[in-house]
Length: 276
Image (spheres, rainbow, N blue to C red):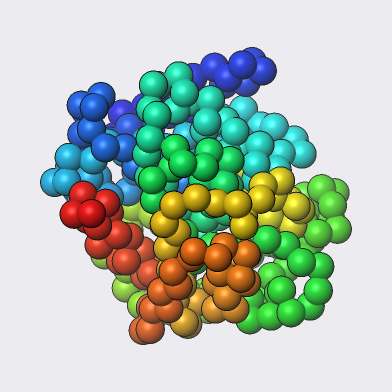
């Protein structure tokens, strides 16, 4: 079950907090960061897993997505700081964090900013910090057109959005199987967010094509990076780039998977939080 709460940030913007899993305030907490686009709601496989493990799930909708006011020019660090404000208000001192796809950079940024308060971090199919060289885009379906436009600035990225189409071949067979079954809620929530507004998607890409504003080499605690070998949206070499910046990172390269299907690895990682 998902519940949502409106929250006013110190600068006056309103955002939305989503809760699921355990309702106990003393329960172990996992702060989730969802993909681009997202609604902030927790997908059903995570809800079931968190409930079984008595984990409390918390997510904070990024600016520009449903229920969260836009913050033009935001960086990855800026969105992570919104989450810090929320967890502080909720009285959550220590927690684990994870993100997939566009949520990956935000999970890593949150861990970098909070140091020892974050007990474990995982990123799934996450882009690496931007580098304006052709190799950064290599292997992306469509050449990473949206991110290329974002690298040219807000006007170029906004103009691109008006004609953008999602290539069907961005997903592997494993992805399509996941989206038609166990991870259907991921696709449904992404579509709902996209139907409401393009602002969050545009601003996410602009943030990814700019400096993140955090020091990844200074991260504390365990960091796990999961990447599908066959991912066509965020290619495999991005996990190697990330690992080169995070000395303690453990890399998990998943075969016969894809950009969405790699989320199957999230549930065992969640179980490890309780077993450890």
